[in-house]
Image 1 (tube, rainbow, N blue to C red):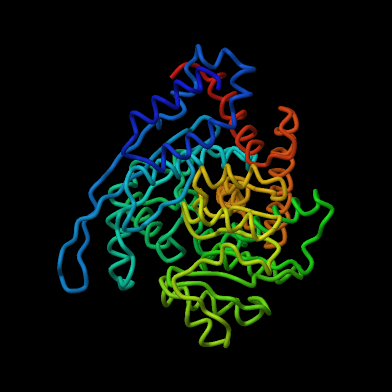
Image 2 (tube, rainbow, N blue to C red):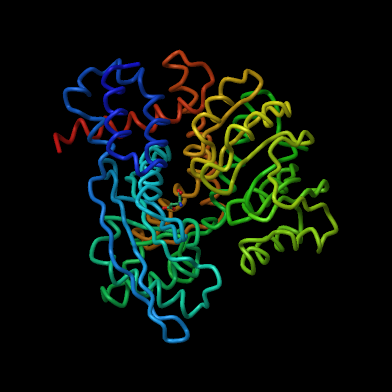
Length: 449
Ligand code: 2IT
């Protein structure tokens, strides 16, 4: 181990012992970039790595809202402006009961390297709240979003920090957030948020972008292996927006999602989620984000309660697409034993570090990291920003073509970075190295701060 990297990791482990998800992502990224640090001794003198793990700015705020019965509630909100070296801070907002600074920081740290990989000028940021959207009425969500934006609006802007959605924040929430921003600022600065509705500056393909991008990335991996997507059976987790995009693009390209899951268990649909079933996914998600069993009832397929599909053998690709630390060591062992060749991470940090390293050590498995695979989402967000600043609207075909090119590039630069450092076809290390190099160079060139 490089002594400088080792000392930074020790520092992070000690200082942030109460933020385990953040420690986990720093360990994951920095274990890959050792060869780069070996090659650049000047990084230590500039203390580049300790600077990188400290957000440029992070703040918390009070979010007070009134429910439909007149009861007042107080939640916490955060925004982490992690690294702005290559562009305005960019990253989603997560509204979920379990959100605390460790979650915001892990997501923000991942976002730095992911955004760098897109090749577009966006820095890394993330935000959110411990607000629990479950069971809230539209009016309650609106009041919450308005209050959230009242606290945040002074600190964001199209050239400052551009939030978007993440778990618990979709088109509806972005609409309320943007409405409040516009009302408070008195300007039509729609480049301040992405994931907007099309009627007020949203981009075509943004709702599909993360899922579509993941499938385009998968195609690049398959191409590398002289294989094709045609006929491939995919086991994914989750049934949210990202899962929906994967289902749609997979079906379009002659592949199919045969397993997916929710918090209540998993669905096995051997015919694949296609046609009207894809539309039903959206409907089911909007109605009940906690249960997917109704899909099995409606379409007469198997539902296995309280279980995940990790380890099933009748698939070709695994794509964890639900949430962080979804795949732990026990699942990783089952995945390896299943004989499936492709393990393509989609959700942010879906694999614990021990499980990820175990899978990477299996010769018969190709592992692709989420920060590359899911980068199409934020990549199209950057295209939305470009359209907003141009005051233009691009067609779905134009956006999709750019997304496709972006994913090819991300795969290529990752593979090349790994190759350059003698690591073979290591997409995990390659993505970390490629993402890191650009940010490191920008920070070195901009002086010490
Ligand atoms: O994790 C992510 O990349 C996102 N939630 C999307 C961020 C964005 O700014 O579109």
